[in-house]
Amino acid sequence: MVSIEAAEPATAPTPEPRRRRRGIQQTRGYRVFQVVNAIILTAVVVVTLYPFVNIVARSMSHEAYIIAGQVNLVPRGFTLDTYQLVLSDSMFWTNYRNTVFYTVTATLISIVMTTCYAYVLSKKDLKGRSALVGIAVFTMFFTGGLIPNYVLVTSLGLKNSVWAIALPNAINVFNLLVMKAFFESLPNDLEEAAAVDGLNTYGILWRIVLPLSKAIVATMVLFYAVAFWNSWFAAFLYLDRQELWPVTIYLRNLIAGATGAENIGAISEANEVQAEATLKAVTIVLTTLPILLVYPFVQRYFVRGIMLGAVKG
Image (tube, rainbow, N blue to C red; front, side, top):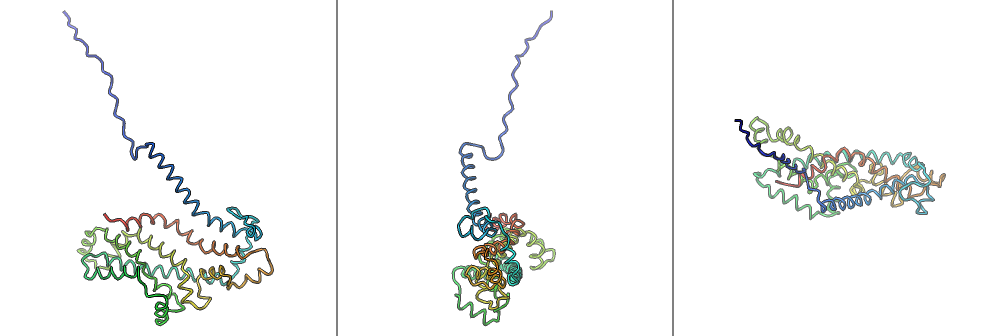
């Protein structure tokens, strides 16, 4: 007699649990936030780029269209004669060369002094650290004044030299505090291990700290380079000879209507096509172009460096 066992009822396979989507859940509120955020950022970009695009368009436009107010984002009456006019002026190139020299020298001095000062302030066991920090912060709110600074620079014999531009502005306190916070975030174990291996303070700074600080150093280089490149008031005060002026003084005099350009007067009399507004636009474009070309190569360090130096944790 054969017994037949009752077969177990077939059960449907249990569905696998849905994998949660990584990242933020795409809710309706989050999608609205993305749209609003994109609109706001796009508006910021447009507002930021519009003046520069307008300047570029004016620099390539005919005088008549500029005077009539018909130049917006696209050049009207396209011409490059004004570029040839400015680029043919020997004083423009002399001042341009001065700007490059002043920017490179002053930035190098500022980076060295800011790095050394910030590294010292990052040592919490340093005697007199609070006084050194207080001295630096004090200068953010109180200065000696214009006339005492001028008397000091003159008495030290720094007039008509690059030192009159570089030394009085060698350390920016904001940059100093950001770099100090970054150095404080580095683990002390690395420096202690390097000291055990026989490195002195300078060796630790050069071989351990600086290789780990490329982002913040690149950020400070960008800050200082832009500041010195755009600076004109210090040169206006301390440089008396035209051949020593930076290109920002050239632009300032051009805007003020007192340009010292050698070729502009003669060429303008022979060719009345170009207007003073066009000359200003061309000079502005040529002055800002180097910074615009350098910035993309440093920008990848910018956000990371400023965040690492500003957030502690």
